[in-house]
Amino acid sequence: MFGAKYGRKQWYPNIGLPSYIIKDGFFQVYYGDSHDLKCSSMAPTSNSSCTVQNTSSSGAGNPDQGVAVVRAKVADVVAAAKKGEGVEWHKLHKGSWTEKGMGGKFTPLNLPPSGYMHGDAAFVKPINKYVLAQQTGGRIQHTKAWRQSIVLSFSVDGLTWGPWQLVYNITDASVPGKPGHNGGQVVYPSLMSHGSDNEVLGKTFAVVFQVRQGNSSGPPFQYSYVNVTVK
Image 1 (cartoon, rainbow, N blue to C red):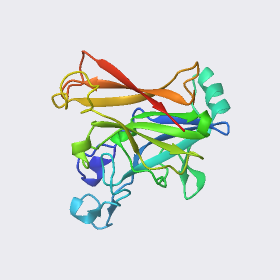
Image 2: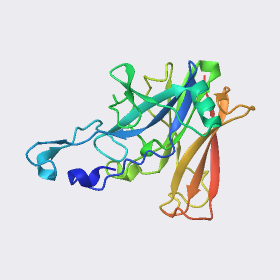
Image 3: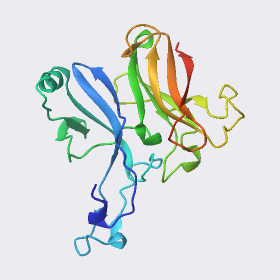
């Protein structure tokens, strides 16, 4: 949004398709956020006078990108939505939910960003943990991993997360066609319960994703899934 203001490269923050959980009466939404560049007051529009803050060594897009979380009360969001209105959300920053969702500062979570953080989240009841499902890679860093795999991460409190765990790779034999799928991609994972509630998962649940032929984002679309069993 403010790239031209600082003369920076056309990086890809792309916060679409965020993931959310419901915790303690709040929606908690996870997405890839980016810090502004630090620029000198003498030449605020020159790239040469600006430095990247390096939020993450493995940013899923930008080297200054990290996983942010923003929240608002479920009751407030629903009540406002029924009137066609919105509410103010707040980002987590230095342990407090004090920063405004629009334009506020954020403290990156310990989880390295993956694939724009375009995925899904839910609560896994048998182990009392939250789970995030994401695609891998980035457009500026980790380009070789871009949309090649589906990964999961688990958390007890929704703030401190475990390492990404591989659950599917596009070269797996179960992908239709030959390994590598001719440069294909696996995109936009969703978590699906074997019961009636996709917000609360059981011991075994499905991770559903789109499979693309080559790098095309156009139809025909093809979908596949893997079952994951926790213990």
